[in-house]
Image (tube, rainbow, N blue to C red; front, top):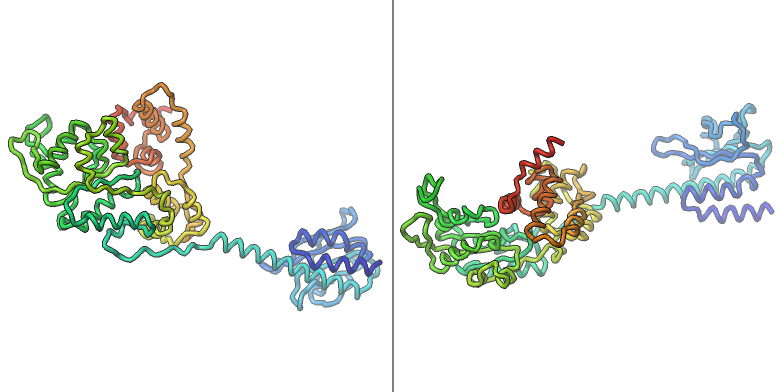
Length: 483
């Protein structure tokens, strides 16, 4: 009978992979196999070379110490030793593998087959060693998985296009090819794409590789200008031409003479200004406000928009003749979610770019964190990705980004929009939504946590929109202070 028990014990012990399995087998077999009243098993903590409780089975006796400290003689001996008669534990044996201690076993019995005890102890020692090694292997694998750094690809070498245009996927190759085709001409270019896709960078790249590159590109954000100042900003004004015109002002068209004029968010231009812009492009001449003479200009126009201008034309909000003047060479910029293969390159670029700004010497990103980025929808596109990398660098205690800090307000915004009343105009709903976000941000418009970041628009664009909708941020600050 004892032979069968010993065989079963050894067979099951050989399959042990963790501490739980070892404890189960010892509880099943040890007392029956050795014919003892109780036992106590402690295992070695290899970190500080101490012994920690592992398992015991003994009578319910409050005077018995289940895990006593081992004696020096016990830890030196290769054979079972008899413990002091005053102790509940009568026999102890060191557990070791090839002389390296892994623990010790104490038992309560008057007599025992020492040969059997040594054989059983040897099997337990091997099982403990295996379980500890498996645990350590799993820990190291988890550590590797957790800290594994994604080997970010290097940015491609300089080509004929602007280095800021990061990306090697098929969609970006089309952009590079389009820039090469149009850069050396004077044709108008219309760049279309969602907010944050890099339209301004494409405009700058076209200018940099054009015959006008020796003069700086002049940029105008049409959405950021108040309606009553757009004409003055574009065409300039003479002194005294209107209240507040205390000096002559040179407009952007004159400043861009023999250079490039970039009109960002052209879809926001008021209808009356669209007519004047069309005339300036067609006739290649302008008049300052209050001026009496025309001024010839040689300006190359590049415009950008996140609107569907063809739809705007069909619905009467944008002049068709101006659209066709601008749309000589259209370039469509894909959203980041349509070029996910470029995310590793972009991440590498932003980690290097933001090192000085954040004061963090980032070296890379883990596979887990990169997968988080690839799975994200990126409604704010590349601008959102750059902000995310900056935030993650600031939050990361290590040079390698282990976890990315993705925005948590998307669900809130979708719920807010889905709850908008159906009997309100688009303008009213837009106004109410901006007010709700401003209230949530306590009137903060720009910067981290500001309304512009949550709404995923430029701060200047939001300020312009607020002026058009008659929203004053001051009252939200006041409300917050009174609260």
